[in-house]
Image (cartoon, rainbow, N blue to C red):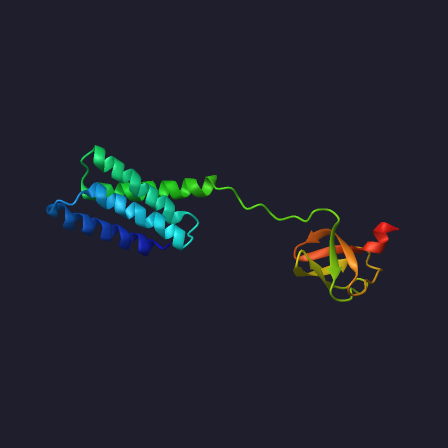
Length: 166
């Protein structure tokens, strides 16, 4: 989300609130509506919970406006402050994605011949991966069962099945 989007949203909220107050439209209802829309946007367009946190901030402002008579400008400033705080805290508290690791000695099958010290292709868990043999002096024929010893970046390090079973 860019700063221009936020500035436009703040300006729009402020103007809508000023326009609706003489008509008897409740600011609490406006903030509840804004909160519901922002939370709904998160369901349609994943924004890493940014829109959701901004919606929660709107609900908090709705609660404050219901309890205290606050001027429109202060409401918008409070919403902005709560949004920034909730987005920051949400990203800090959100669990990081776990780096995928390969279990020891899982099976795969060679798709191409793996020449000594060179790369080939291995079918592992339904996907084709670059692979090389752990023993750089060995060649592995195509369609051979292999054990995946480890992963180095996007390359699997494999050993032929017959070496481990003998």
